[in-house]
Amino acid sequence: MEILKIFLLIFGSFIIFSLAGIMSGWFDRKISARFQFRVGPPLWQNFLDLAKLTGKEIVIPDSANQFIFLFSPIIGIIAITATGAILFSNIFFYPLKWDLFIFIYLLLIPSIVIFLAGSSSGNVLASVGAGRELRLLLSYELPFIIALLVPVIKCGTVQISEISRYQIANGVNTGHISGMIAFIVALFAFLGKIGYVPFDVSEAETEIAAGTFIEYSGFLLALFKLMKWILLSVGISFLVIYFMGGFRNPLTGFLKYLLVLFLIVLIKNTNPRLRTDQILRFSWGWLTMFGMLAVIFALMGY
Figure 1 (cartoon, rainbow, N blue to C red):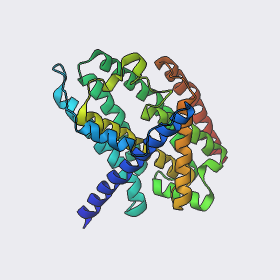
Figure 2 (cartoon, rainbow, N blue to C red; figure 1 turned 135 degrees about the vertical axis):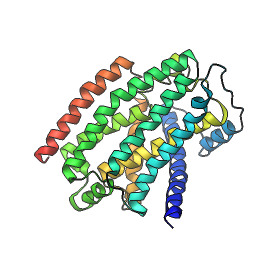
Figure 3 (tube, rainbow, N blue to C red; figure 1 turned 90 degrees about the vertical axis):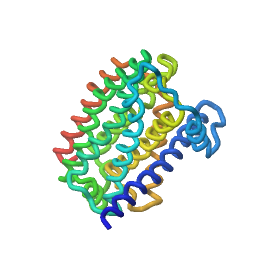
Figure 4 (spheres, rainbow, N blue to C red; figure 1 turned 90 degrees about the horizontal axis):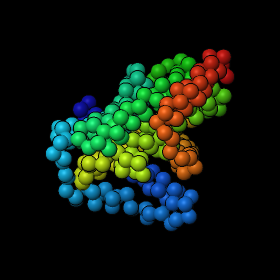
């Protein structure tokens, strides 16, 4: 019975967050098109893109480390599916102790496999993208963790389900000064995790021609696209649960999800790409400073 529950948890997490991620990716493309006075793709476009890539040939460069090149996207999909399963476990099954630490750890893995994928392909531009991805990881992770400390201080627990339950009884974390600041910091840090503008330096089509993914094709590239979409839906769901009270009411939870997604798309379409040094200064400077300010406010009870 326990094995069946775990299977349902993982399989359900993959299906739900895949569908949510694909549709979120379509929403991003559609709204971005409207910002640029275009019509944008139809509702089913991302499904067609995945199907098209899946049917194409996989080309492996002669100079690539074949094992890492092949298994990087698979490991990324497994890791982000497990991350989503933690959120589902808190809602439908049994909450895990110290699940916040597990969640943070698993959320690191997609960025790590992108770095490994780029560095293993044997392409110079991919190596440049891999180096940028690693510096990006080092830049946003500190303010992201600091921002996540605020609900821990306010709620007195590191269990995601308990933090969500605390908000039901005491109001959402974004209803407090410290929680709102922490949410904004976490949102910008999450933009770095998904590689959206202004933090898209590791792909940067106009500079390094897709960077880390330049040598990927076919089913492997489809897996990376799907991983990014799942990461988008899992990350937004986590921000909604952690800072905005979660999905206790499905309608309001869905509206919160759309609000966070729209904020991400808005930031993406109203900012230029930053250089790596600018990202480091912004993350270790402004984001970290405001994250620490949020922690101080939380300790003071605001």
